Image (cartoon, rainbow, N blue to C red; front, top):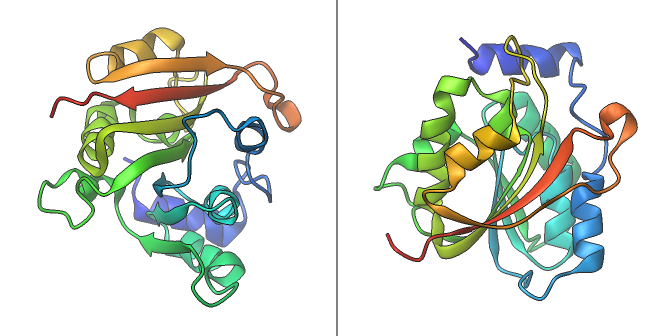
Length: 204
């Protein structure tokens, strides 16, 4: 089972191929296009890693909290982005994202947006319902989930098999699909990355 030691060991050894050294091109393009619904608000970034995506949205005016399981990832994010300037709009917290499903969490109902970059694909498939519980718990009714998901077939992961059908099975009961599209991807990821925008049901 994947655990904190697994993820920390990847940062300790430098084996972090998911880290582009910059924000995802999908998110850069989304902010450049800036659809009407994408107005600054409070954003949670799940599996925030070294903080590139979180910092991108903070720079664009969002109030951002990045959550990651690996202490090394959080330390790196804080070092590069967390102390950039007084009153910086991005913060990072070392935390098991599944704890965010607790209705008594101080983060419950606090966020207008949840951002994720292949977090859903990296966790064990059996953990996906718990992932959904966390997302639903911290999003405000009508809040937006912005995710980059890898459409691939690898049961041994991570990243694990994630198909368009599986995404619909996971999200359709609680979210409205606003868009699913392919932007130019980084390096060798062309063709199997999808930018998915989903709106949380207003019924809770």
